[in-house]
Image (cartoon, rainbow, N blue to C red):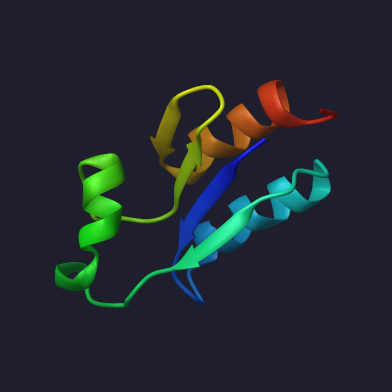
Length: 81
């Protein structure tokens, strides 16, 4: 399973998603992004926007943003795999 989380250090929404992934026992890779929105070209390339957090689930072809949506996805889809 290849899960990638794009996150900003100190971002409370990113920390919430990190906690959800950890609590669900999901293995994932974090890509830390620049604090400046203008420097987040990789985030824009994968998600169409520059905000974080962004979760990419390559195995299912899913890319999503918004921490509450990601938390729901983690709980309903990824937990226990």
